[in-house]
Amino acid sequence: MDALIIADMDGAQAQYILEVDQLAERHRLLFVTDGSGQALAYQEKYAEAVEYNAGHDGPFPHLNAEAEARELSVEALVSEVVAMRTAWRSVSAQIEAARARAKKRIRSTQDTEDWTLAVQAFKTELPALKKDAP
Image (cartoon, rainbow, N blue to C red; front, side, top):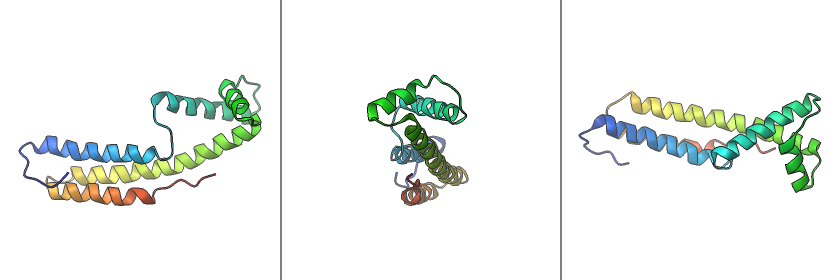
């Protein structure tokens, strides 16, 4: 958005905040697959991996199905799932901190030029936020 003279400042501010949220989501999608169902599948696989590592007997339907499909051992897949979750937690926290800073900056002023600068600063910061690939 360009800095403009805007009659509805609250609505305009909300648009800048929405832009920050959308940018954060696009950056998250560099690391995870889109979709609520996919997020649930990731959660289920991780929960099963935790149970597996704790020595429980299962069942582990997500892990078994994916291990079979990918021709991996369940143990190898568990290691991968845990490593990916660890890496995701790191980058996710970084994205959330940057997002919160940008939104705080937008909310702290009624100046559209400052809002534009906050969004631009966020856009500049995002590419540096990377997960360490396992």
